[in-house]
Length: 101
Image (tube, rainbow, N blue to C red; front, side, top):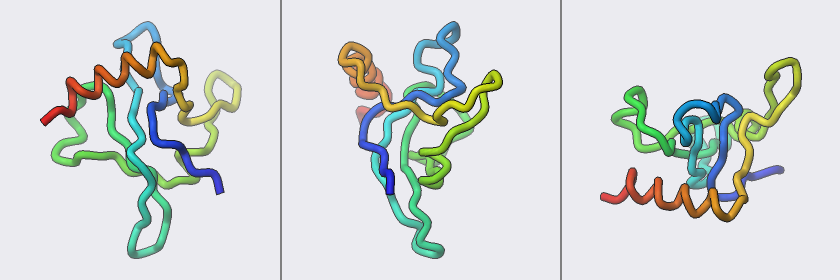
């Protein structure tokens, strides 16, 4: 079973010509739905949006999170784990500004 590491991810809809952090997320962990036992990835956006309130996290089925989608005629990962140290450091700062309570 493939479980995503905690950390930062870019969704395939990310547009580098738009806001720099649009469709970028932090994976918090994996949870299990107590009713059907489905594994869910818990994650939160690194950009402002109105539709998520009052929730603190998004939840997506593990298989869907780890799956692929078609974009521009090619199959691409729905989410890509970000490992570039400079980008990760930048996203840590973004996260601290958005989620420091």
